[in-house]
Each structure stands twice: as structure tokens, then as C-alpha cells.
Amino acid sequence: MKKNLLLTLGTLVSIAISMPVFSKTNIKVGHGAADTYHMHKAWVKFKEIVEKESNQEITVDIFPNGQVGGDRELTEAVQSGIVDMTSPVVEVMSGWDNAFTVPGLPYIFPNREGALKALYGEFGNKLLEKAQNFGLEGLGWMENGIRNITSNVNCPITKPGDLKGVKIRTMQVDAHMDAFKAMGAKPTPMSFNEVYSALQQGVIDAEENPLGHIYSSHFYEVQKCVTLSGHVYSTHMVLANPDFYNGLSETNRALVNSALKRAIDYQQEVIAKEEQEQINAIRAAGVTVTELTPEQSAVFEKVVAPVREKYTEAVDPELIKALESVKN
Image (cartoon, rainbow, N blue to C red; front, side):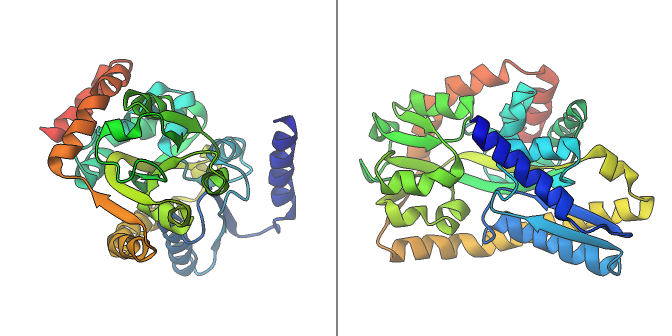
């Protein structure tokens, strides 16, 4: 662990030192996703808009694929100013405040549309404001995706009982692990970069991720079935270093905000186009893809309801009130 930490710090320092000194504004963005993933494509769109509309007065350098570290390391790098912006899965922030657990609770949102409405309303704004308590500026939300289950055993998975005893990789998120325990599975948290080899070698039987990750990271190549369980809407929280963000001129800050909004809208266009193509490609590879019926989904939701209630009861009631107002 100490060695890995030193390596990560060394990477951060080397990037900071090796970056050229600009008389103009340079924005360093880091994230952990593959450069084929729709979230990376959103950052590329952000870069294109900012550089074009500033006439190259602002340049953007993007470090994808976890080059600078995982979500936690990147968040800390933004806090310290080594990186200017990042977009971790929001659950990473739960280490500072358990309110950030709420968006990633199982079946907390009815669907993607409901999730976006909540995140870009009072509920999401309250969470973005909380980031300021931890030396971060919350600027918006990029989609990670709707999480689904893949497996090599008990295929197809159509009910919670099919997961009994299944070793499934999850993120290091207590709520996610509790949910899969409630289904009878054996949740096994591990780094995202280790998942493919762990599936290939049989260290784990299954994993759960959005379609974009399942496809772009080729998990389907070492899995027999995919269940479109849609158990969690997973979102990235866009964060900036406050000194960097507040140090921008009013014009440049407005451009960053505008470019980010347009990049996020673009991401939704990419997702809409890619998802069906990804399902078709996964099926063409010989993998069984199962879409749950509303009745089957209701069984999963019922099993994990106590987990959802446990975590929502532990946070500010006003936050939950803001969330519920969107559903009504």
C-alpha cells in the first residue's frame, strides 16, 4: 500500500513538474475511465469548446485511464491543486459526508430521466454545495451509467436468489456491498483496473457496471451473461479546485461553466446512441443478455429496500425531502 501510494504521488509530482509553464490558462483534467468511454468523450468535448471559444487562450490537458490515480487519489489531487478538475463517482465523496451515498443507493431513482431531474434540481445542488466543505468546488454531474450485472455462473440471473454465493466485484461502497449481501451474493470490492483479470482468472464470478464500462473495458469477453438489472444509477460529480476555479476571470469562468454544460448534454447524446449498439455487440459476442420484466425488477427492489432506508435515514432529512419532491 505504501509503495503504491508513493508511486501515485510520484506520478502526480512528475505531471505537475513536466507540464509546460503557460502564460495563458491551462486546465489539467484527470479521470479514471477508459479513453473510449462516454465520460471521457464528454471531457474531450469540453476541451474542444473551451479551446475554440477562448481562441486558445485557455488550453485543456486530459489524463484518462487512471494515469494520475483512482477516483480517491484524483479527488485529493484536485484538493491540493495538482490537478484542476476531475469527475469521480459521487460515492467516493461519502468518505467525507455520507450524504454523497444517496445518489448511488439501489433503486433510489425510478429511471435515468428521474435521476437527471433530481441531480439538476434542488437535490443535486445541495450535494454540490456540500463539496465546498471539503476544499472542492462542485460544478455538475456527468453520467457514469445505469449499473447492470454480469456473471459466469447461475446464468441467466433473473432473481436475487440467482446471486446466492456468487463472488461479485463491487466498488468499495458500503451501500453497494450491503445491497448485494441482501441478495445473498458475496461482494468483493477491488480496484476497477483489476476487474478484467480477476474475471478471467476466476478470482471473482461476476461484476456490476454500466454498459459503457462493460463494453469499453471488454468485461463481456470473460462473462457468460449480462442482466440489465438497472439497480443503481451511477453518476460522476464534476469537481474543481476552488483556487483554480475562483481565480479564473469572470469571462473564463462563464466559459468553463457553459462548456461543461454543453459537454454534459453531448454525453447524453453519445449514451443514447451507444447503448443499443453495445447491447447488440455484446450479444453478437455470444453473451446472453437478459432484460428484466417490471415484475422481476420489483423483486430486486423489494429485497434491497431495507438497505436504501438504512442509508437515507442517516442523512439530513432536508436532502431526502428535496429528492422526494422530484418523485411526487
